Figure (cartoon, rainbow, N blue to C red):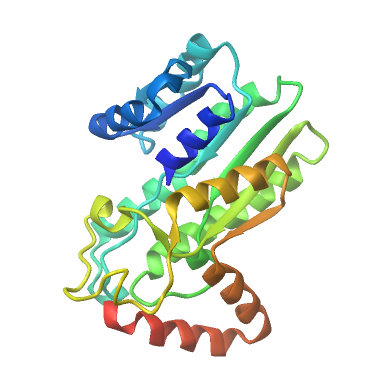
Amino acid sequence: MGRELVLNLLNKGARVAAIDLSVAGLTETFKLAGSKSTNLTSHVFNITDRASIETLPQQVIEAHGAIDGVINCAGIIQPFVPIARLDYAAIERVMNVNFYGTVYMTKSFLPHLLKRPEAHIVNISSMGGFLPVPGQSVYGASKAAVKLFTEGLRSELLDTKVKVTIVFPGAIETNIAANSGAEIKTGVTKDTSSIKMTAAPKAAQIIIDGMEKNRYRILVGPDAKFLDFLYRLAPKFAAEFIYKQMKALM
């Protein structure tokens, strides 16, 4: 989804600094950008390394002259196991990437964004950040933390020119499971699952459109919209409903 966000922004004429831990991933993004890659720079960083991330804004400014927006979309899921079987290393890894990585990026770039005539921060949470998903309880906790961190940040910045948006994607067709090292049970695929996924390019379009319109919150995909409504209406029923949908992955 991050790659599709980059390509979407480039197609709109934006200059983009792409940040990733994977050199191969950044190289592939450059290839897909084609002639528009002249407006793209790549930066290999580990977002869980706070000291390193604090040096990133200056590199972006040197490459592009200014920073007008940040989209924090890096994220990983946990292995599909209950908390009782989840080791602390996996717990810490998920929290470090999903929550602390978002915090480090936000705090490092915010002083520069506050100097701009107008700026925007978009933080990507998850449908799992407002709805309990068994087998992804720590992932959900990390994304719930992103949710409240972002909503609190928005309130703190109401009297500034920095806008803030929180995004709740549903099931998106990405490689997040493979990239996270989270094994999916054999026989459970996007074709066999009862959960309809949203294509990554469509998700990116929804997010960028919402950013341009300064949305408070963005729900990506029909599943996210439906479950957001259902969880507000009947939280216990919604939790049991998603358990039945996800049971095959446990």
